[in-house]
Amino acid sequence: MKDIKRPRLSLVMCFVCCILALLGIGVVSVFLPGIVYFYADGMPDLTRPVPIIITLYVALAVAAAVVILLMRLLHVVRTDRVFTPISSRLVEAIAWLVIAEGFVFAVLGLLDIQIAFGVFFVAVTMGLCLMVVRTVLKDAAAHKEENDGTI
Image (tube, rainbow, N blue to C red; front, side, top):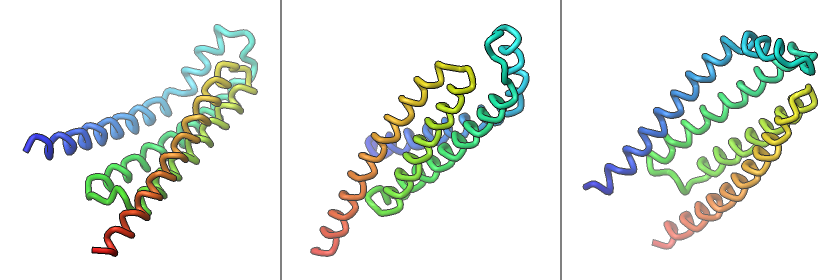
C-alpha cells in the first residue's frame, strides 16, 4: 500500500510546488520594476532599465507557461497516461519553451547583464535534454501501443 501512495504523494508535492512557482511569478511580476530600478541605482553600467524590465516580463511569461504545462503533465501522469502521445507532446512543448527562455536571457545578456548568457547556455542545454526525453517517451508510447495491440 505504501508504494501506491508514495508516487501519488510526490505528484501532489510537485503540483503544490507548481502552484507556489506560479504565485512566485505573480509576486515578482508586481515588484519587478521596483527591483530593476533598485539595482539600476547601484550599477552605473545598467543604462537601459526599461528594455530590461520588458525582457524580464517576457521571461516571466515563458516561465509561467512552462509551469502550466508541467501541471498538465502532472495530470497526465496522475491519470496513468505517461506513455501516450500527449505526454511526449507536452514534454516537447516544455522543451521548446525552455529553449525560448534561454534566448530571452540571451537578449537580457545583450542589455548589459552578462551573467544572463550563462542562463542562456543552461536553458538551451536543458531544453535539448528535454528533447531527448521527449524522444524516449515517444518511442515508449509506440512500443506500448504495439504491445497493447498484440494482447
